[in-house]
Length: 65
Picture 1 (tube, rainbow, N blue to C red):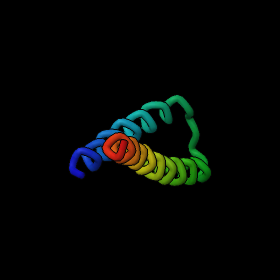
Picture 2 (cartoon, rainbow, N blue to C red; picture 1 turned 60 degrees about the vertical axis):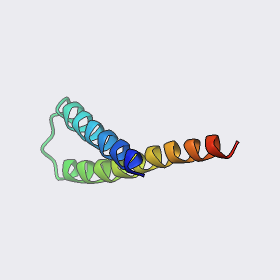
Picture 3 (cartoon, rainbow, N blue to C red; picture 1 turned 180 degrees about the vertical axis):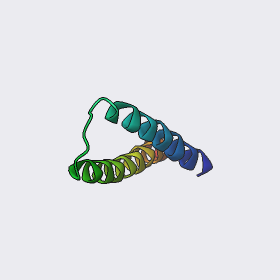
């Protein structure tokens, strides 16, 4: 289980770093930018959870067959 948790946090860290690097390309200053960062961060967290869950399911299926 620890390898899936480490994959989750590694993917989360890489995604957050890429999110903030690429967000620097767009120069804004609106109040909408705050909403974009908020929803973007929520989407990143949910997608990294799904990626870690997919690794777990793939390993589970490999062990059963």
